[in-house]
Length: 211
Image (cartoon, rainbow, N blue to C red):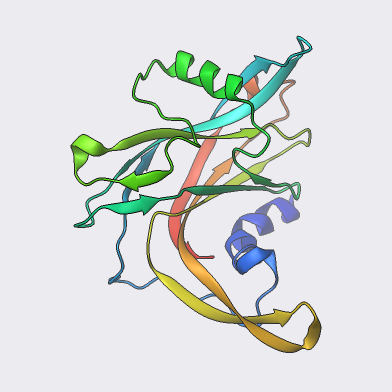
């Protein structure tokens, strides 16, 4: 139980440095009043879905529907990057290895004709609510018994900072690493259901971090 609680407190720090290397100094906090651009981001609770593969076997995935609005004052490039971390030690890149059929099944379930796939949503982002982007982050369900789930969404802000990290080639030296303002969402998954469809998802909080 103690390990599960500790995960929530240290998730941002443990994954804060670029490429997940440990930082020598703690990552800086985002500016209280940022001078950088920032998209408006809203989202729904992660949901599970089962989709058949080409062999007719059912595979479970999670997906997070979201909406982004560009109210930054000018057209910008939108390149979302979503990483999922669990208390079981899983680090998952959303979209990696996810088949087109999975997005098609999600779009059909949601019933939103404006929903763009994780690949199609990347590109120039025009301003105002009328040009908002509706998309979804998708990742395969882990086989581990997960009690905690944390999502890191990058690409929503232009705020960056530089921190010192160990040099992989020589740990006695340091190199500069770039960290960016990232949106973090924390969930609790209580119990041990037999499949993700029976899994409760409890929202535990959100915050901006530098990662």
